[in-house]
Length: 173
Ligand SMILES: NC(=O)N[C@H]1NC(=O)NC1=O
Image 1 (cartoon, rainbow, N blue to C red):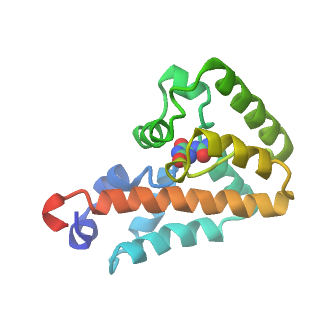
Image 2 (tube, rainbow, N blue to C red):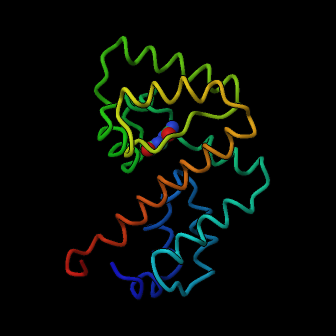
């Protein structure tokens, strides 16, 4: 898909295609649509991220809360979004043994209790061992720093999802 195609989309199509660039936050795609035309992928990305940066802290925390836990109950229930399913399975998080799953569940619960939002990490840049390590490390970080780190991960996830969508047409590669 090239940027001309993106710029030609009506509102409904745009939200259908880009609604999950930021996990379970189609409102962001709905807001970004009114900023078109976009010059390229970078420009489109800038608009998604500017929306996130302009939110009050409660909105930014809301975005984090829309993310499913890594290797959490949604994996077992089969209710992950297609994107999250791909990312989590690529990092080996959907096939953990019971012990590893329990350890991650405990760390996820401690993290949520400490910061009030779920642990978010771009799983495509990680693997099962690195996820537990990073979770344990970030549990000890100051809250103000942790919000910034977590939003940085949301942006990494969004960048990868946008790149996938814009490279989806092999004829344009
Ligand atoms: N909790 C969390 O980080 N979830 C996200 N990470 C990722 O790569 N995909 C997700 O759904």
